[in-house]
Image (tube, rainbow, N blue to C red; front, side, top):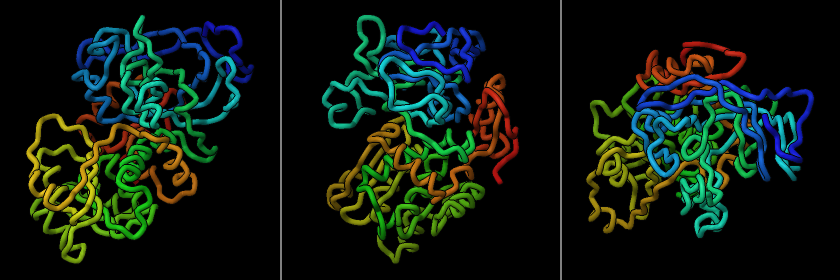
Length: 387
């Protein structure tokens, strides 16, 4: 690390000049190489990355490009390192940083907005108007690690202090890497009204975010929590995470099933996490009058929605991006208190050098993979499956 003046280090953590990092070449092509260890600037720290979880959006970035935006365009062949759901250890402090100490373990949010646009000043930094404006003469201060700047599929990364949430020493690395996922689940519920004690919630689609939506909703007091999917193994995990009811919609109508489970009426909130083409329309017919629907999944195509039903029934639709409004801190607090076991969604661990194999497991759901984690050191389990 070529440290600027006033960077604080500690002899307990020897920081090399270069590190192993995966970079994206052509679509779907990951290349392992050496890159310089970045140095933290003002309001930044250097993180030794200990664990990185693979997200479906990583797959979008690696195979298709968007929503990654590097140097104003597609991310391919730009020496860019993807990966955005990571945790690690603070090993160096940028000039003037006293909010964190070297040696602290932290989970790292993705987004650090520019801090000056209208949305950032409202606390909506995941909707920063200067998204991707972080190169050359266009550097407006925006950062989204793993989307618009280098991410976590490497050994070290710099993060703005605003993106960090401390995690306890007894939280395993693999679970710490899931704080960001839980933060996205928390953000979905925050936008729907925050604490939902006593109100009913349906979660459609039990990928990692959907499973943790069920967990967070139950931890916040929702009643009942109804989880909807087509995979029995994921429905079983949802029950362990607190879902009161589960619905396998392979052979039954989702709306009818949810209404029956909730006393014949729609639920207060529905969170759509599947990205299935008909799921948005299903969600709006699943909530009661005045209900709210959060769209947490990235759709890959235009979808049809019964807008007349939305209007006549005063239904509210919300879209979210990532883990906004410091939701990771609230999610981490629930995890710290062991209100739910996020580790239930972690199924496989691979070494950093085996990232392409890990990507394949996540992409193809090999061996019933749900959340796949890569580690730069101390691999705990490979292909273990959910327990």
